[in-house]
Length: 435
View 1: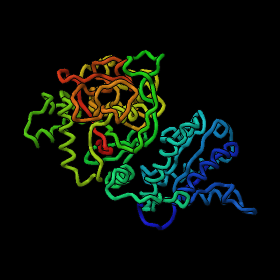
View 2 (view 1 turned 135 degrees about the vertical axis):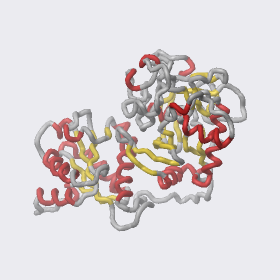
View 3 (view 1 turned 45 degrees about the horizontal axis):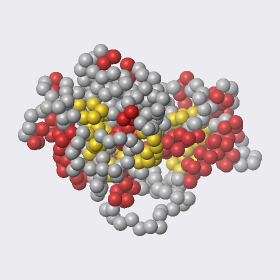
View 4 (view 1 turned 90 degrees about the horizontal axis):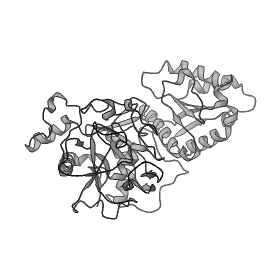
């Protein structure tokens, strides 16, 4: 629970009459959370009340406004347009950076001009609604946190009857988001993604659930990427927004009294570190864990991401070919076609090249080590590929600044060899311990 139990977060649902069914479903989900007072006209307006007065009064006293947009609502005059003008006037009085207006597209409509600078979320197609709702709820949590309003489970979501032993693996997976968010500095990155600065690194949250991994038979891809299959990651985790930089790695080599692997790194401290072996990356993670152990819940580590964790963070749930979509764009990543011929500062292609969760540089710049041994698909976390005591080639992901667009695809895999490290770095994840 965050904040004090002073009052609920007041949320206003702005919508057109034609979108009632979808908005009514959203109203029920938000109300079931238990810490929001959601204003929906058909629920709040009573017979005899003045429509204009009550709506303007509700808007004037609300904490956040969800503006539901559809082809029908944005193409004609009506209450959505009238309410929106009033909402925008209120927003001008809010401190800069306040989460107040949350655009929610219900179909593939064009957003009103005055809302185009505000990050929104697509509540369509139906199979993506749960992910969209998760992102919407996260923004409302941040708004509540800023107002010191308590966030707690509603009565419709009772706690499990089963007792969870303190310190257990199940407890760790359940509490990881709560712990990281509590200890983090939370802010919005360019593009509107929420980031969590934890152990002096920026992270983005990847929610638990299924995603499409690998490539289809008809795709122009290696056989090692097939078959495309569904993988369920049953826990939330936090992926570093950027690869580990030269400056971050310098703290490690200084503490260990060893030589930095990248010559001349002082001239580019914010570039990703290179010339790092898998064992080097594992040793860095161990050092970081030892340094920050008191900040992590039991059973949770700062470690290399598994191949599945990396791919989901890079492409989302629906099998995007690149982090930003299905069409290659040399202006969204550092690959050979862009002509840089060297690494670039982390985040140089953000937000245009970011993944659906806000992870940057997941296409190009440097190859990245994963925790996983190179094995055939389908991916199975418990088939030995995550055993740290087994020797073999480990998977690298993401491509590099001298790589092709084909190698920068989110599903592309490379069998990492210890003797080819000129363009290899890594990033870390906050996730449950791998047994």
